[in-house]
Length: 141
Image 1 (tube, rainbow, N blue to C red):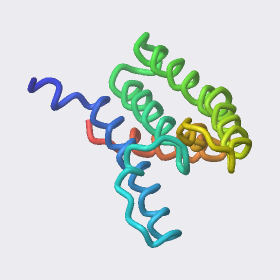
Image 2 (cartoon, helix red, strand yellow):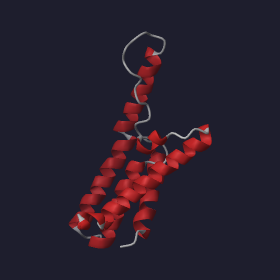
Image 3 (tube, rainbow, N blue to C red):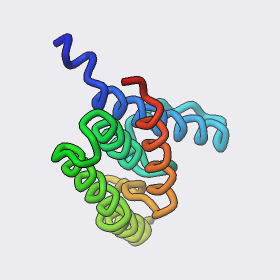
Image 4 (tube, rainbow, N blue to C red):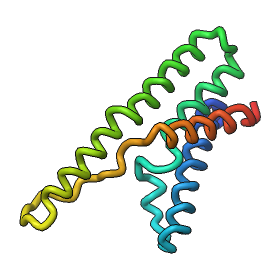
């Protein structure tokens, strides 16, 4: 258990996720003047916490294991896939949810409202990736 608590890549990834989610919480608080703690665990929005998490993970692994290591290669490919998915598949799912919610508006049905904030714009992914890189770069190892 002690080794898990001092796993630098894991801790850096969790810190990057926390900072990204907290930024969403603060942004929403400023916009709506409403404190909604659920935002800390929601997907979508600015910045991409998915991107910040996987980039921080890859950055710290690269710093510890070296940029020529298999672990860094794995983390880099993993980060690339996650970011691609966030702007591609998941953004399309959010767009489809918005269309379906609009379609069923005013029609009596028992289907719950679909979550529209699922994916990210490329800008949100880039900002999340930059946040993750900074966290990973300055995380103490």
